[in-house]
Image (cartoon, rainbow, N blue to C red; front, side, top):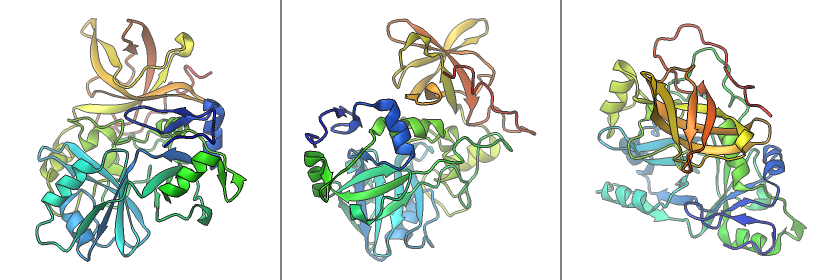
Length: 367
């Protein structure tokens, strides 16, 4: 999709092809998004399930309890590998006749898996990505967008049957976080992109980068960024909203229970305040180092980064659980430049924690 109606639009490439990252004002657009302007996530895939067995069948395959999901209630669920690694992550809402699944990925692999598990169940699986696009917003957009169904992000609440790996008693920085995903007919979005008008009136968008900056600020893990081939749910605090620990058997359940009940996840997600004096934003995949036994070694990598309109440069990263919470971290760019980073715990360093420490380092590199 091209955006001739918005000549200042900066369009993304893979893995976000044809997505308007910003419209010429990256930082003001973050405030605009926070105030309710939509951002386009046209690279999201959309899957529709129909048939009377759709929820009970998906319940048996995934991590969430879906047996009594009422129409219009939003949740999310995961498909895990036998070893508990995240393979597919769905944002989910049922309208009473169909179940809508969305997520920032090509839906083909997920559809192939779902088809392989359908057997004799009364379920039909359809790829609706060509018909529907996703708009992100911090408020419900209303009927002028002629939405299909709206998914309301449950983050950062702890859903029924869920659990939190964050420090107990501390106020979560995502407490005021709101995010909605509205399905919009692609032909309508294409018309708006071409003309810059909706029903004859100018429409003001925020860029996708604005939505990402506010997501990072809220410590919200994303299937687009915080998941690799070995990610466990406990490593990224996904047990809050995507896993029901008391539901029946599903693939990977034993691994989830073993880590939750007996051990600690091998990695932990951290929020990073970055030294912005070098004016370089580290991309995803940037190596994170720490001093280990007297020498500096790689302990993880950046998963998401942004220049936040209030906090300055920030990032999320996955590091080894053994790294101390007060350890000074440094990010190593490809050209050898290093960026100092102060961490805040998202997934707590230790399982038995007692009283939570206050959030640390939030103002260390604030502009």
